[in-house]
Image 1 (cartoon, protein in one colour):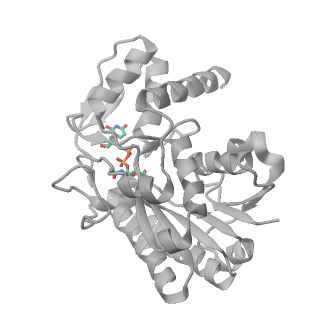
Image 2 (tube, rainbow, N blue to C red):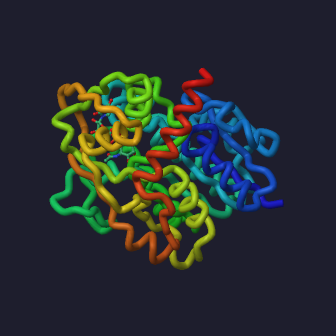
Length: 317
Ligand code: UD2
């Protein structure tokens, strides 16, 4: 039986990937997660098919044996926040750079087949041109953006120097069910969802005209699996945009969320956040061509599905 490992597999994106791997034929999935933001409950429907190791990627001795011998490793464990990396740069650096190095080293020394890495669109910073293409020069604006970029470079160097198969996917503002809305660092859509259901006004940082390529979590999970299966000669050592290809401002997005719910609530506005990118939109040409990327959910469809999930969850809570 082929071993599949997902670091961060109890998190919002990781747990969606675990469910999709099982749907697409994996008999069991090994999850490595320190449960700092992930939750065992995120895996509840598939828990019996998951070998969960509550382990930190910063602890090499503990995590290396879990990765050893895996055919496919998906590295999603991270401290994934621009503002948190500014307020608390040390844990962010340790997890996102040292932890990623540990995962790559464990893959190399443990004879793993392929590593697929969750990179970030934040690496681009503010480009003059949209959409953003992989050939553009990265211009990180925050420690988090730089850390994720270092991870990408490390992937390609492990491919070049030691022949480890790697593929990096730059995620573009992923949203969907199970995104935790409870922290000040939570993704904006998880905050919008709870605000609209509780009929409270969100705070938009800046003028709300910044834009994002919001990507539904199931499309990202599907692309991760495609990246783990694409021919090595074509994709190994390469980084791809994993966005949806669209672009919506925060003002438009809040209005759309309110329209789906049938309410009108004026947002509050606060100061622009340090390290914030102004506009973000993926050119998905390379991912479509090489990985067969084919998003299944438009932004409004993803919003509706997400809102349904938050509604069911908030009612139960
Ligand atoms: C970055 C990356 C994304 C992913 C993510 C991980 C970019 C363009 N995107 O997302 O790919 O790696 O980091 O976390 O760099 N905001 C509000 N009110 C709130 C919360 C957020 O207005 O209550 C704003 C925030 O200032 C930003 C936008 O919403 O302009 C999106 O913020 P986010 O934290 O959801 O994600 P972002 O863009 O930092």
